[in-house]
Amino acid sequence: WIRFEDNFSEHPKVLALSDAAFRLHVRAISYAARHLTDGCVTPAAVRSLSRRALLSEELVTVGLWERTSDGFHIHDYLEYQPSRSEVEDRRKADRDRKMADGIHSGSKSSRRGIR
Image 1: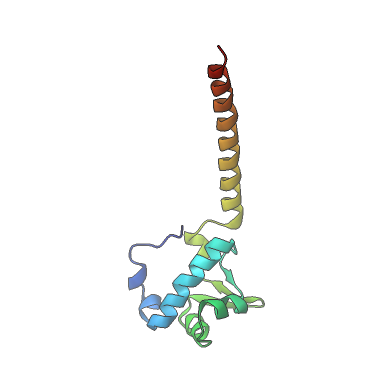
Image 2 (image 1 turned 180 degrees about the vertical axis):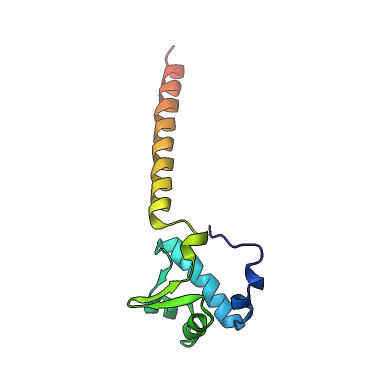
């Protein structure tokens, strides 16, 4: 899941974008969330998300992306999306909880089977 404020599409930086750059920005946020990059987007990822090379420059120009030594960083990504460590911690807690529930419910069902 990715999070957007309900006024995201009305932000002046977003309003300044072409439709193609808007689409790339949303796809890059989704990519960063799926791959747990904390908002970093490599040039290879940009090429896989859009065939138009100049779109990343448009996103840098309006201030939605920042150029880095490894490619780009989505401005304020971690203000709205959970970090890699937060996601990994939540996933581990979910796994641990499910295992505990499974062990607990497994022992109940094994007791039910004994007569």
